[in-house]
Image (spheres, rainbow, N blue to C red):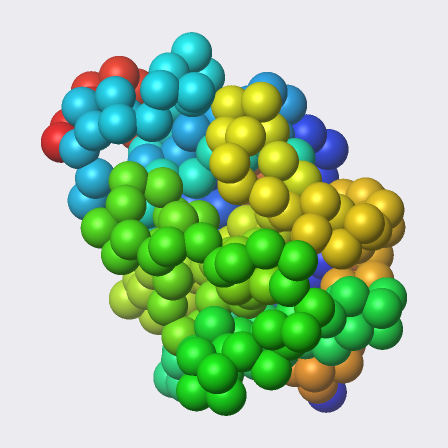
Length: 260
């Protein structure tokens, strides 16, 4: 059976979080090591999608005072505060790397199953639309209007997003290196004062999920779904050096974050 490293990181600043994901992708690309990582953010941070203009952050006034970082992945901006973030790096020879859309749906399917085990009903947005919202009876308020051009990722919808009562609570994105694939995503647990209109799982279902508990439960379920044997690990010296390099040259650089 394949093995994979599990990293449970403490909260860190946004530029460092993005630097670590980049370093883990480079490791998977160079060595074939699979890594699943869970992390959170030490301060509320707005991450821009790779192709977004930093000038557009003016469109979201509540987060103007938050730290800014640009992701390597595309999509809309995310306000990282009351949430859990995951990243999964798989090498090209891994069966899931070549099936990137299936990997996306598998990870999100595992999250849906986990939430169901906690008494929390959620679904993929595409399934909700196709089935004309099977959970509509549970909705105490109408689903929000969806604007696919919105600056904020959680105001957009795609078929693979996880929704509760029509509101997006999980979104992920992918980036491919020459010999590896990175998938990382945000699991929104609750609203933030810097994005008060975006409700999370705990808001919508009166749940009490914490990042620490959720990461432990989700790690077990994901490894089982992926049929991979996990072991607890940490960043290695060379990975730390790579992360430090990309931190200074890219993610913590004003030139990088304002390149568009």
